[in-house]
Length: 389
Image (tube, rainbow, N blue to C red; front, side):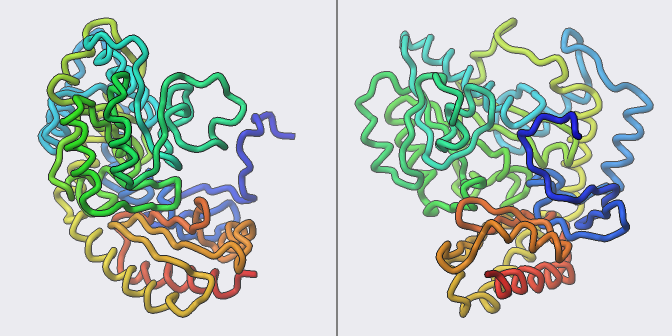
């Protein structure tokens, strides 16, 4: 009998090693990881450059308190700010913690404006984390179930609907809008190309902060370092995690302008946030992305995957839509024609790791995927859907 709490229901497999897009279980079977550990190991499992940085830093220094200067942390902050045109960074240990920091900054922004009951607008079907504040921000009743009373006040509106946002322009308590550029946990929901531009303009008009949660969309996942760069805008707050550490836990909340001045001494902290090990690894992640044409590969493989999926799946009645941005892939399914509850196990039986999000198959393959590996992935996905009940 396992002594683990039962908040997870793991599939019956245990992995012991990984290499690139592949994982190996205890029996020696190899599985294609089309999820990158849920968008974490963007550069693949056990990338040699990342492994070297982990080993070298582990031999040198793992941890010191943030009461002292940490050189790798300061260098990483400079590089992230240069890449994003943000002003400064707070380092945490996860995406939820990065979003928690952004929410606290929005509260301080409200205090400066004399707003006693601040509200943040987020989107229905969004996902921002599982701390009390971030699950309150999350627009999903299942995530919130059992945890009332929630942290107030979050207002949820339809995603990709600027009019739904505009209706709150006369609410003097609103201080920020918090959005994912693409909704990942909802099944890769991609808004209209000018949606974020309109949101940014509305925020400026109403003196609201724009918080972009790029925990999943950041670090090259969409073909640019950050998804909002397709819109040529800069948010007030930008949150990162997942691919930033390629498996090593790190989160980051970047701020710009007024938002960058609100965390002062004693306002926030993290025991482990930004320690020498995780920052050294994150610097290596940036090196690999910038020096190995990773973003170019994302664009090339994205186009190839899109073409192949359209060719192979367009005539299958159960497939309702194919949504792709970079290497974020959602395949919308007709619930009346496919029993989604069986797909995870069927995929695992074929040594493929996928995710079911809403009514969609969600795929987040490593950014280093090759065309030969794309062919393997496509064949397995087509087989999975064609043989589904």
